[in-house]
Each structure stands twice: as C-alpha cells, then as structure tokens.
Image (tube, rainbow, N blue to C red; front, top):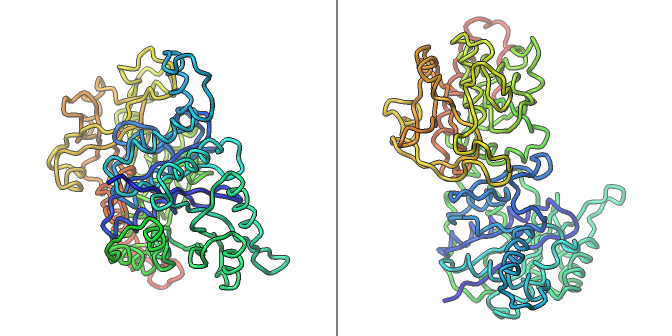
Length: 553
C-alpha cells in the first residue's frame, strides 16, 4: 500500500511551531501503531544550513549519514522513531543544485527548464523517496504562506493532492489567534487572511492549528470554521504550554490525530500515551531542581543549542528533577572574577562551536570545574578546550592551544583533521555523521552506556593531537574512548573527579525524552549529588542562617 501524506504549513508569522506540530502528530500516529516518516523543506537558497550563522538559523542538526540539517529534524527524532537521513531535509538550494546538474548533463534533452514542472517534479520525487517504508509521511513546508520562496513547495503539495486524491492527503495549517491587549480580545482576522492566502494558490486546509496564549471560545472557533471552510472540530486551539512534551497530549485531547486518520481513511487502535503522560507528570511535579551553567559562544540565541538544552531536560526528567539552565557568554568569563560568576552551579557544560571568540572564558570555566570538583561535561569544542586547559595548567605547557585559535602556538594540542589538510571549503567538509567509539571498561563513559562500544554523531574539523598524549596522560588525564582503529580520540576523563568528561562527538543529537542519553543522565546525576553535598555543607556550617540555604523548587 502506498503511503499517505500530511502536509504542515504555517501562516501569519514565522516561529509558530510547525516543526513541533509535525513531530507531535507523528508521535500520536506512532502511539496508534502507524509507521511514520517526516521531512522538512526549507525555502532558502543555501544547499544546507552547515555554513549559516547559529544566531540566524539556530542549531545545525546532524543525522547518522552525516547530513547537516534543520533543527526541526531534532524534534522529529525526539518525538518519533523515524530514522532520518539527508533525504528528510531539502532546501531550495539543493533542489536547484540537482536540477542544474541534470540540465548540464543533458537530462532534459534540450527542453526549457521551468519551475513547473521541473522544480515541482523534483520536490514531489523527494517526497515519494522517503515514503518507501512508511504508512504516513508528514511533510513540513518551511517559511510562511505568502513568501515568494515557499511558492514552489506549496504548488508541489497542491499537485500531490491532485495526484493522490483527497483520501490520501491532509493539509494542516498552523496559524495565529493573537491577543490584542488594547482591545482586550482575541482576533481571528490573521487566521482568516492566512487561509485566504492558501486558497489563492489552490490549497484548502483541512485542519487549523490555531496558536494562542489563552483559551479560544467556542463561538470564535465556529466563526473561524465558517469563514475558513473547515469543520468546527478541525479548528484546534493549540494553546501555549510550559513543556513542549505536553504538546502531543494537548493535540490528542483536541482530537488532531483522530481527525487526520478520518480524513486519510485509516483505521487504527487507540493511542497508548502512558509514557508521555509520565514524562509530563515528571516535568510538572519535580522532587527538586538541578542548576547547570552552559558556557557558550551563541547563548544570546538559545535555539543555537536546541538539542543540547533538550538533552539536559531529558537527563533531569530521568531523575524527576527540574532543570535550571543559566546561559553564560564565554567572553564574559575572560575576567579575573570569573570564579565568582561560576559559584553556586551544580554542574558546568561547555558545548560545541567554532572560532576563537570566548575560548579563554571557556578555559577559565573548565579550570574552575576541575579545581573545585564541580561536575563538568565538555562536548566537541568542550572536549578540545578541556585538553588545552589541562595542558596549560596541569602539564605546564603555558601557551598550549589549538591550531584553530593560534596557528603559531608552540604546543598544538588540537590540530586540523589530517584528512582536511589543504581543504579550505567550508560546506560539508567536516567529520560528519555516525562513527564508532570503543571505551575503556572501567571508565565513566562505559559505566554510563553499560557497554564499551557505541556509535555517536560528529561535527568537527579539529582533533586531539596524539603527539601530546603521553604528556597529558602522564599528568593524570585519561583517554577512555577512541575510534576502533585508535586514530581519533573520542573521550577524555579525569580520574578521581566527581564527573569530568569530554567527548568529541555530539551525544545531544541522540537523546529522547523517553530515552535520555546516558551521558546526560549521569552528568545530571553527578550534578545533583554535588548540589546535595553543597546543601549538607551549608547545613553544617551555617545552621543559624537559613537564608543562606539554596532554595528547593
């Protein structure tokens, strides 16, 4: 049987949560026993987001096959069990790159190459390609209806309904019902105009997900249904919630999945959402909190670390804890008082990044964590800087650095990947995707994983220089994880420290709320133990002054 399709579009404004909506619908269909796949079309001309600024685009999510993709694919993987590849995220740039390659090869036999049918056919072929092993494919169209850039994708999904029939396609449109403070009322006109824009290009939405920060009265839903030509039950009040993991439950309560299945003429069992209910219960009923400082380069825009933040949430949920994250700009720690800025945190994390800005602040944060026994977790750049800090302050290699930050350093602890020597192109030239790692049996990492062999995703241009291995390990640093052929260092640890671990890979890409990543789970556990020890110390030293105690949640 051929796959059926659910198309998710957005109107009025961007950032309405189309990706989260698509992921939540996928979650609900999986809970009913339906096999799903998801994909995202991005209308920008970049071939992929790999060279785009984190401040503008947010996180680059990496799949097992090494694709640099949109951050929404992270939502898809966290909420479902879909196995995503580079085929699940296409940009306008990549579509046009494929078409121009074919044209130069002569595939079009001298025909004039046009948006219709050549671009739209390429888009439709991409949608069919990911449908091979799925019953339902959920396709998100990036951007906002009315944008010139999105028109070819919208035309393609319009054609898909013509090709497949109404019973095999559903259009879900995410829109906005804003609250106008001056008038003290919700307004439906933006939604009406958004649907009108959809109708002008030949698409009639079947389901409206109306974002709002408060309850939408029934009479307002009736009005929207009348003017937008949809069934009243298909006007869904997608109200803001405190935890994104509640979204599938709110959609289920509103009957979103039941409506989609009705329109697709699919019969399925009732959804089993017991594990999601448990997760949400934990999120809203924590036993305590844990405080983590993230010392990064792009903290002004939290979406730059989207998967990282969610992986920490997953680790906290595993212990029924509330996560309290403080984002620290690394440059702000390049001052003599850096220690005072880091006091009181239960754990410290340095994430990935590129370039030399803020490196000295990261090194100060790592030194503080190492010397005070504060649990430390370094990811990618966070592992590299941990090695540099150890070389400088423990091994006495005063000017130790990475070739990325100081090409003239006399102690090049980190250097460019050997296979990239002479490669100057930026796009897609890193060590990307899933690579195997072998760990020492008695290491922190192996204890967390419960095994000595794992596969993790990577995104980096620089590696640990093993010429300095003897110097650093002789001074106490331990290399506990490498590639099976021992070429690359993957994990470093400091024995005797409560938790000090750096990994070259990005474990955050494989963490799910129902399956927390072992390293994040154990980092949170160590951080919470540090919190309890600190509280016990305060109790012993200042019993007469309860105002000094750290507050519980």
